[in-house]
Length: 460
Image (tube, rainbow, N blue to C red; front, top):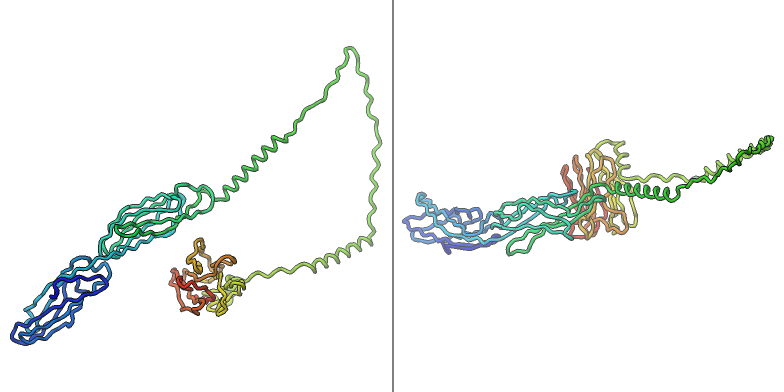
């Protein structure tokens, strides 16, 4: 072997020469076969060598270890089995040593990235060692304002090459929310390794209120009304007091008789108002009828109901039952378009007008879910992920003028699949993509493009 020991970096290659001499008295052919742990990524050139007696030949061994945990760091002994064709029992196995340099690659992921709870959240951190050396790391948690307490089990991990470790994390809010809506608290689990920059894995903890917000509002309103009623009652309660006094009589003297009140005649009856003449009454009726007719003529007509994707899908199912998808686009400066169905084009092509929202409805797919992506913002926090029944409207994006246009979308149906094509600014129509049952599939501009969505086509 020349040299007998060699060093190589994972992902690159190195070469070692093997010199072979025929010490016999006949022409012989020698076959070469690498053995040992490096054999799978070792090549011998040539694989066979024919030598005359007393002559010497050379073969090259090329080692190309991959940048994976399979290429174990450190010394790796190897050998080459040399088998003569004429004397197969006279096998020679020269040996050498190959040193593979170490490399480190760690990947960490929170599962799930968003957890919800009133008193605690329990995500899991998966740490994968993709290098060829053992990794030792410590774990910690942090958030803005130190609103959460962290319990990580275990707090330190040692991971062999090609293995993964799972860390159970328990998040507890330092203050309990009794009333109000959900509060989102971003946090990060930090992975610290010796000689490397700390790696942060970001997640979100959604803290739910103990009692709904409307209950606190109702209780406060009832309490305020009770206090107001008691205050008014105490301030304005009438004080009843008699001021009558009985006149004392003199002793031995009778009280003079009191005359009885005179009997008055009954008051005369009020003069009855004479009824209006029949002719006037009839005329008034005619006027009333005329006025009523005129008022009916001036009544505004009822505005027709807006036709949505759900309206369109119900109409097409009434004509042809089965799986259908209808949709419409909210185009900037133009508003909502009329809904189209089953592969038709929604939006605009080549006019530079972006789509800000999509309205989608399906039939016979056991529901549809989706979310929207935005130019320059990626997945926007606060987007609602909704699961609707068949033939009901699902709206992605926003029609508010202050909100940005859509860049892309994800869709998922629970029976069958949905296929979509997207027309992106300066990229024309992209290729068709179809979901697998119950799985997501993204459509639209790649996040690094930052290009607006202008038209779509959907089929199920």
